[in-house]
Amino acid sequence: MSHDPKEALQDARRQLEIAGSPSPARDASALMDKVQGDAPPWTPLSDAQLAELNRYIQRRARREPISHIVGKRAFWMHDFIVTDAVLDPRPETETLVSVASDTSFARVLDLGTGSGCILLSLLYEVPEATGVGVDVSEPALDIARQNAQRVGVEDRVTLLVSDWFDKVEGQFDLIVSNPPYIAEVEMPDLAPELSFEPRLALTDEADGLTAYRAITSGAGRFLKPSGRLLVEIGPTQAVAVSDLFAAHGFTDVTVHPDLDGRDRVVSGVFPPQNATN
Ligand code: GLN
Image (tube, rainbow, N blue to C red):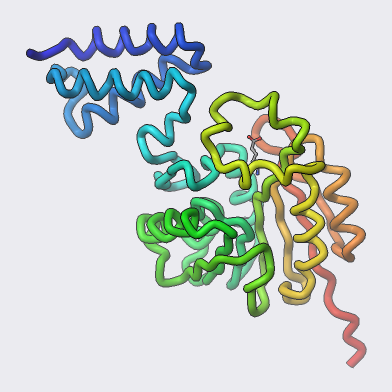
């Protein structure tokens, strides 16, 4: 039997609305796209396709992120593969890519690279640059490797397991990171979708600043003189993170807003060494 796609779409939207999805119309059309593949939207659905759609609706009704169900998320210039092994790339993180792309760099390090969305987008933007991405999670690096191929920068990237700087070698013009910055006390109030993401990528199980302490204290050893450090922050962390940058000797410490006007990125320049010669 075949089924009217318009009715199926409306029905999906109604079910998702009842289930409390914050974006039922957008979700329904994303799930429908996944079921229909390349077929035009008016193509009738088979029994199997309708059953598949219903399985996706049930998953979404439990508030599983759409990106996990469809397996990808659009970020900057590409669709990135996304699973529950990595933080779901978020539009506000494009602020970090945008600020970083405006600087000049030949060698970039990404701490806690996850899906690789930041690092791989930067390598895409600067075709002569090379980069290193580290993460404590090997399953996350598997996803980053697949994404490197998709973006076509696999020859210019090294991905390795490391706890922040532990296994990092060499000197960089630019260090970027979107570390876990949600404080433990904030975790229970988050949207249900976040419970499907790796907790390790979201929170330090403390005050939300642990990663910034490690990154600002370690970065100096890995930055070339006048190199830059750029980190994503939560909107309430601008002062605390700027203070950490200043305390570790960074200059030109600047807070950059995201497209919603919220504080989102802190940048700083590592001063030239006291070269008296
Ligand atoms: N921006 C994410 C959120 O608030 C948090 C990601 C992170 O901790 N780096 O949902």
